[in-house]
Length: 273
Picture 1 (cartoon, rainbow, N blue to C red):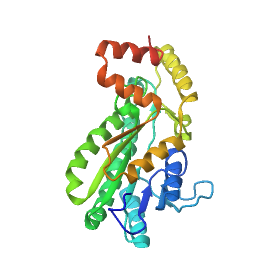
Picture 2: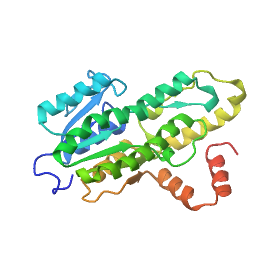
Picture 3: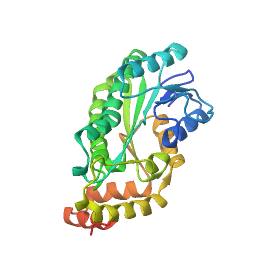
């Protein structure tokens, strides 16, 4: 975080820090001079880390309140919040029950709101703070066979931009990080839809093959973490930071290409042509 925001060692809270992008971000922030607290649904997540890993379930009010109070009690401040915890399901939109859809939204969107609402009073009292919401390149473009994950990330885009306008006057800024395909346990542990339909078998298989190919050439968690630190430390942060070649290409194509051309490229990319 820029030196104008605090003369003390800044305190960062990173959700979903037991692996992948969250763990890499926590380590990079630690190296950049932050006091870092990571969180996981299970505080006893495997492996030792150079930062405390607190139990925090973003879907539970009491869990969020307790973890934020713990950090506040230890440090007396929270300067940076990285909302990274998330889950995904893959399959055709019709193949997920409403219960499964609710589960994804409860973590990926409502969880961000829940943690942010718990931290914002602290930042407002401090008169400074920064919130980095980990979105996705799929928050900018359609995502066949990943509709609900993409929907949560589209929601996060609108929420973050609106919130940024609301809290700037308190010295707080909100930023969205938009990674592309990234080789992490999150990507490889994605759940499948809970009510698969045979009608989608052929298209689903084509999509999964295209996805696996993209994943093999995807970015590393470390490269996304580098972008996170850049956004955290920027004196005048941008609203959005896109990370990864495919995310940058997708954002460009969505913005500048004619719709028909964009659709053709999308279908070819996802093996649906």
